[in-house]
Length: 131
Image (cartoon, rainbow, N blue to C red; front, side, top):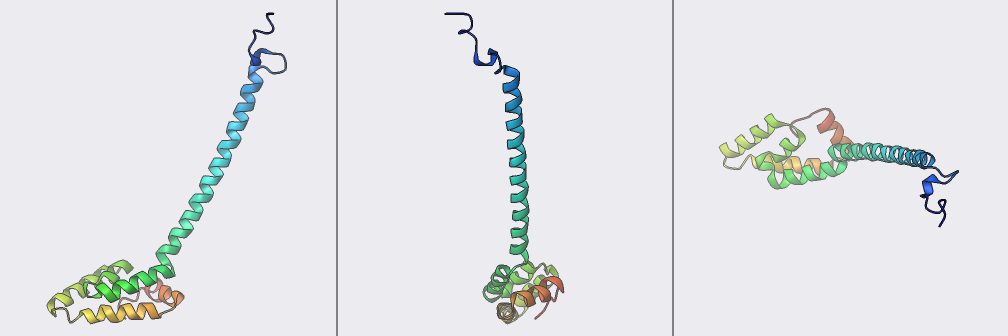
């Protein structure tokens, strides 16, 4: 065996270790940039989807159903961010032995019969607390 055959691949002329390391750095840098772009794209789309869920039509349906089923507890009010009105609903239900629960039931039906856009404008943007 000659001395040339015992050298490692990076030691051969035209294929030295420095060139291989530079190529590896470039490849790693390209991969890192692609991963960063993909992560940013995922983050942006996740934010968009989260905003749709928080202000979209599916939330309207959930809030409407909660109003029908648990309206006497004011749960639908809490879900819309109306803490004071939710506590009033809960207190009125306790004081009237449940009779005030009809308000939550009616509001649940109203929520479900409104269009998504009308619901969003009325209860999320304009913050209309009752009916």
